[in-house]
View 1 (cartoon, rainbow, N blue to C red):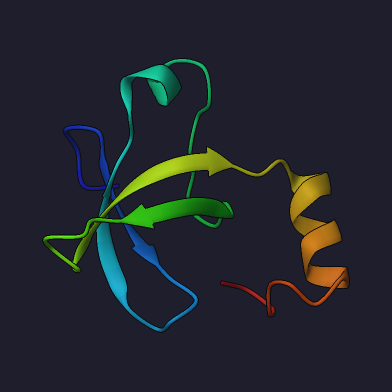
View 2 (view 1 turned 180 degrees about the vertical axis):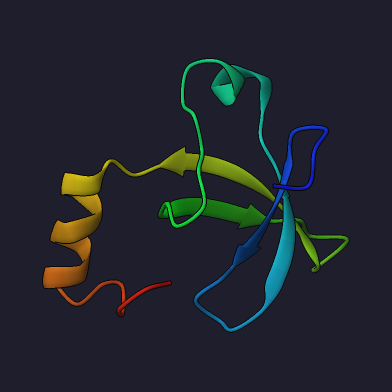
Length: 73
């Protein structure tokens, strides 16, 4: 957590990006360290992204078991 609705995320491509939590998720979906999130990198700045979705624990486990996500991402 960086403050001002921004977090640092580690993406599947090995990059660390600064991601922005959109207004529709701020009070409804609380994001904590270790959560699995879907991000959309910006076209014009590759080191920044927007968070699109936060997966629940059950959904994250299903993605790991299916081989879509490796280990602790």
